[in-house]
Image (cartoon, rainbow over all chains, first blue to last red; front, side, top):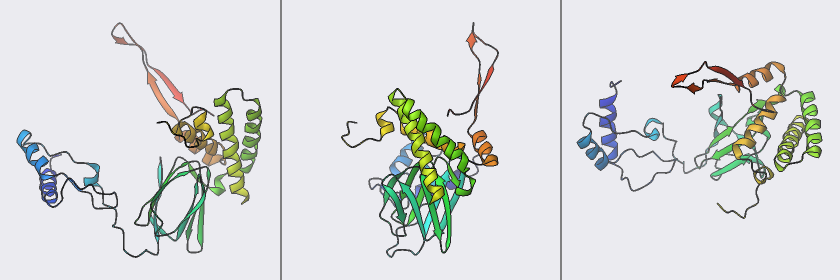
Length: 203
Length: 70
């Protein structure tokens, strides 16, 4: 357990002296670690314990923003149960933002986009891979890195069109019979999701 | 938190984003072809072991398995 202690301790002290704690780093910069005054006072009160580490001390820093726009976009596409794409270099992704389908190329302005149920396509040369996303967020960073986070994402060929038709009819019926606001909203979501799947399958 | 911006219909009905996105995810899961559908639904199952406390002792635990609604 304490095998790494001496290494971690010496590293954090060495790095801390070079960076002031008052300048806050952006996520695209190399993360600053603990400041030296904190480490010194920590050592006074707890000489046998390592100073606390933050997650940024353990994570690989994001690559810096290059001055020229790179030719490829780096995509991280994660689901709660799987990492679909990790650091994959592609030409373009088209994401289903709430404001409409959004094409993301290298050098895109940094944005956070909320996603709606819809189709996401990953373009890699002539190869296009399509997923249906339920909802989520896309975080586009200045250094041409895109993090796409979805609750559920499935390849299009896994979808059963007959189930979609059944679901759509069911929720359209529910929408007319709904009495409370909540029931109405649930039926509305049902109709929207199934219509989006339908559109994705036909388009 | 008073915002004058347009709110989505599900937000106006009192849903949170988590509720909304879970409903969406469930609907997508229910539209899958068979091997994938069963796989996706089992992944979402949760199991609770509940035991009530009475007179300072734990009663017999009850296992509750919940699949998400919809």
